[in-house]
Length: 175
Image 1: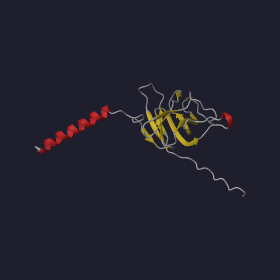
Image 2: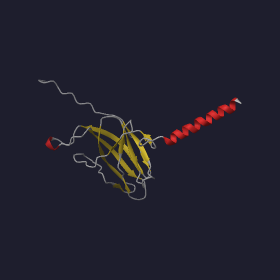
Image 3: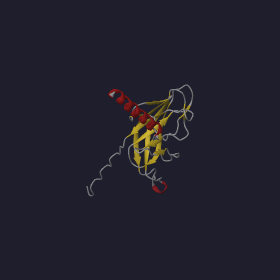
Image 4: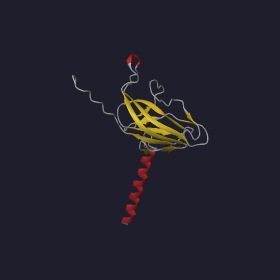
């Protein structure tokens, strides 16, 4: 009789876990696999590869400099189309550790090699450039998707660790 009771308890626990899983709200990107920066990431016909990042306090200089609400994060990447037809490169988003999402900025003035916002890539071609975000300093995951109809898109997450270049020391005065 003891084994039957254990089986019933196990089945009830499994049913409760499945019910809880079905009712839980997923954070953005919870359905996507995570990859390390520098690894090629295939999402449908598109293959993304993030090579580096750069944090900036402003874009440009002087009175026309763009000042961010938080900090500018530039992400350098390539996107290769492995498909047989032209493909749009969808908007990318950043996801922080709490699930908060940040959308890519639509204006890239003063950004060298800006990838653009409305972009396509031809079959067997690679687009290179940088995308721009205004986010608090921290580690993120870049959510990338394939060019598919809403509801049938596939996504992946690319780890974007916090990497800030050290400031160069200023030599002492009089030397």
